[in-house]
Image (cartoon, rainbow, N blue to C red; front, side, top):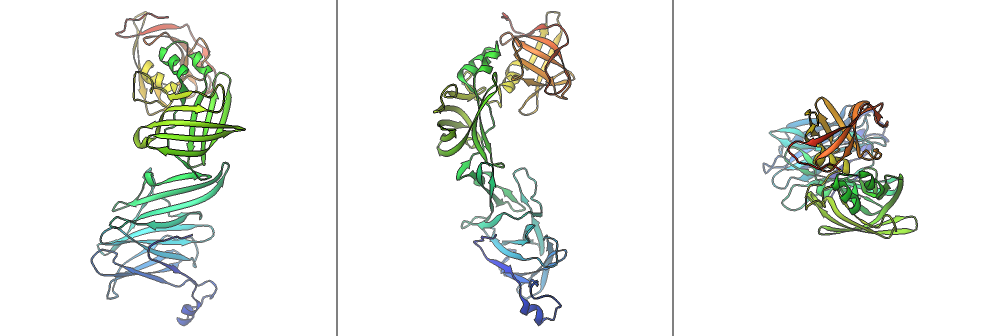
Length: 434
């Protein structure tokens, strides 16, 4: 479906035209050539684009004001000899204009954008946030239009509405003209589920104050696993905006879909439903684009969920760094460094990659796992390959820990003891182990 604010010409069935030129086509299926005029190259004169469908795409010809052909190209279209199409022009903000060619059938829609430069038609890629160009053709369902502001390049907008498990998901994607491409504009793109905007927030695990205090003590992390964790799920692709609570020690889970959302500066409020209970949530946001919830207060769900939550790192000595999870915080702030055993052997650990972090020690690459550890172990270091040698770690404060060799049969298997524990201390630290 097209909703264009600029100049648009739709090629329709025109039996009279085809009969006049004597072509042997069916009046019910013929698609006539179409044309549109604008100053495409910005030289102050008007060019005319003429297009017609063919079995190998939409044939495009550009002629100058005198009718002389100066450029030609072939735009993508669904397979078939007779494919309805539209031509649309859009301002680039100063001199010149863009040409959009959209060809569609019941099963496929092809959209391409072109610019006339140096007497040649050049394709203008439409790029996602990842930098990947959209495919030439996709299943139908998007509504395309151009939006423009005086003196600024036009923006290409596409929207679609679809049914998902949570209700009706409306997705809007905006692409801004950057000279040689139309690039995704995250700030003007987004999605709504049942009319509620879905923000793009950092997918952190939020912990209670009690859990964070245990985490920072570097001792007896099992107490932390008895506290509820909160994840605010914001998945614009699946249409999910929900509070997800989990108590690791019991496996108890509670999901409350968000049904209201308001933002005022760096403060946000959410409403969410969990059965007959209504949660009222207040958040303080920080980071780039206010995308990181730093301080979250939950009320209305009862114990143990009505608490204040924050991500690992945010409440530690005024630190501004925020970690994806408790495991990432331990990896970065506790494990990374050089350690020495009572026998004088040194072990180096380094954080590797983006979150979720991995730990490199010698030739081993290990994944920290806090959730699956059982007392007296505080976390497991699993082999990144899934099976193999790893460690069970018991923390003894910020500068000491016990390492026990382990064997893991698979990525989710328990630790099978493979040796006696050894106490390590951080090089350069004077410590009293607990």
